[in-house]
View (tube, rainbow, N blue to C red):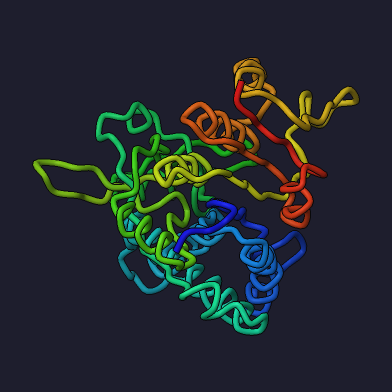
Length: 322
């Protein structure tokens, strides 16, 4: 089932589930998901095929908090980080899947325009010798005292670093994604008219050893994984949605300058000059650069509430070939 307007990969940020000021209740999750889902439905109405991916930063952190509490109070052993990632894919995938399905039926688009909505628990292949494994930098989970951190490091072979905001937190590697193990299934379902939700949280990080897969303790950046997904699917557009309206030069300063349209070459120059923070806009811009350099037509970085305007060129940063 081909679309007249091609394929868009939509990468939702954390505000698709929990926005600023929310307590993170079940009601918050459903309300935000239905707002985000409106974007997907409008894209379908306009004739696009859609594949959806999403972040899981707050949610995997919540699971880490649960595990820390269970370990402390009940002596319940913690799950590994790959399993925690799989848990968030099921959790958030279910919410998006149901919200999209209900909206499609409400608008009369199911099953006439979309055959179904599916969530795929997605594994993402990384290199076992990725340099990130030698220098874990991604903070995750609760804060600990130095003594608590040292005890947990001995017991579970975890790495800890001082957090700039105080205390100690666990740090894990963030290796570069190579490909989604389930990419063929994702592609086939998308081509047959299904909306596919996949690669949640950057995917479950796995390495291949002697022809077998093994999960590893790591976190993959979801925007970089979205680029791998969009490139593998030969999508026309990669739409990265966040809580900032544009990518900026000199962000946060008096001479901040928003970027509206920028070539991949120009964006790379700005990236290498350090204009985009590693834990924030940096991976989004790098994902957009990679997508266009790998043959994509257009990468957009925009605020979640301005997604449709961004597609029309009225908002957001557009990275184009050149």
